[in-house]
Image 1: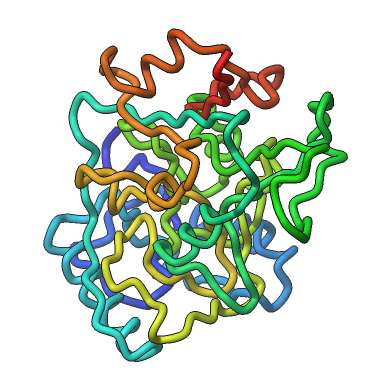
Image 2 (image 1 turned 180 degrees about the vertical axis):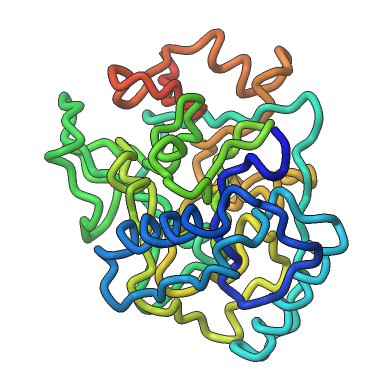
Length: 317
């Protein structure tokens, strides 16, 4: 599509300038006014959580359209902001998808003991807010004999595992037909070639339509500025993954892409004491996760909604 025919995307929220002249003629004059009015309508439910972008901000390029030089300058600005906010020098990167790799996850329900070590390893790795606390993984305590997730509890207390329950961790399922992607009015969330559904926190307007669309309740909204102690900051950050998020945006699990695209396991896989969690390239027929999907009894949560997730539950028998 020619440059002048594109619909505009939403701006970076850090106020940074991008290089290159604005040539989107279709959104000058009355078209631009209409576009800003539409944006105002989308932002109306947020009240004073975020400010309406200016027309200049509104017409800036999407992250996916930036040059490598533009992206590097953006990373340096983010690193400077992290230094200012947390007193930590961050290394901001954007590892690309690996050709020939499609990530998938398999979780053995029979082995999970509900310890929630995965929850806190995820928080530590991905710089999630400690106050208010944001968790990407919910471990559901399910009564044996039931598959009703609506009657489960994820805030259970006491020693685990409990004899009368089993445990089902739930996080982003990285759906092939991701309803959150379709719901986003500004293309702030999209699916990468390796299957990971990502969010550009600079582009997100906080409308929360994606949260409403997700059948797995996998997305979290920052009602307050995330609070992370300086000594708990992970300085190895990915632009589309674990860099600190601002107030007023949505975030979620991204398969620790700052790790997995560099040949490492997600933090939750590494910390699991029972080996319940398996992760790998589903396109490789010899990979552990591909073998599990081929040979084990597989359960897909909410299969009836047709999202075709890359997250599979399985049983040993």
